[in-house]
Length: 312
Image 1 (cartoon, rainbow, N blue to C red):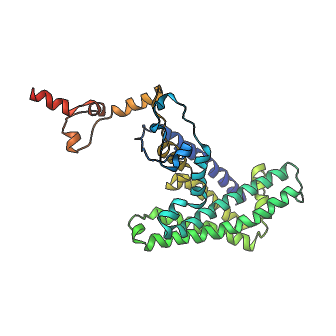
Image 2 (cartoon, rainbow, N blue to C red):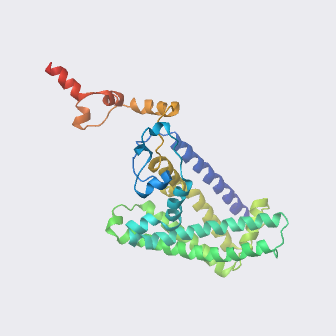
Image 3 (cartoon, rainbow, N blue to C red):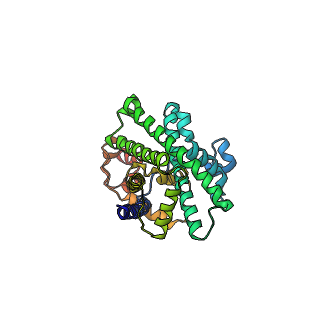
């Protein structure tokens, strides 16, 4: 059983990273998206205060376009940590969504701290050293808090999807299955902490064995079940719509904030050329009525000039 648990964890890590890389490279190969032209753009710096942008400058194409990374962080940090947009636009959903997401952040930190402590001990750090003592203390806080918040948030979202008319019609089996999987996994993690591993010493030893490929017996069936569930969750998340936890980077930086002008950019021109040669399949009269076969023909067609020619 122990060997199976170790191999399952290794397999899940491989699936996780391969899937993440595949989704990122697949996105980067997608056709050029339509620019949103939504303002303010976070990296515009002072111009964001009134919704401005570099296009308001005279001769903007000859001027440098500095980007404010601080401006981006001012938007990203509140959104990532506190779900600011949900708070502002759907307060009732926020009360369930925030604890779920924040609980997952704490669980991620918990696992990172386990790994950090394990590597430290493998490198010779004493368990009584100051740095490991601090890490142990933070681990003991992050773990239980993360488990409880994740369970409460997932249960709240499950209930909202069952009862809220604005969510019920758009909730599929996958949504309920995903939330249920989180609830079951975090419940086993909470039970393992309560009944088997109150100081996470067993979990830390397991992490040390995992990192060092020392596949010794685990010694706790409850911990084994917990680890298998975590492995399943880890491999499963990037295969679903929950992959937004990393794909959201592109939503913000490439789509919402992607305002780079096409000036002497052969790569952008090549992407535009591909898109313009797509066949026109729209049935709208103002498009289909012209009888054009590609979007390049639609883009270069002047209906006013055509009408004037007929008059002559």
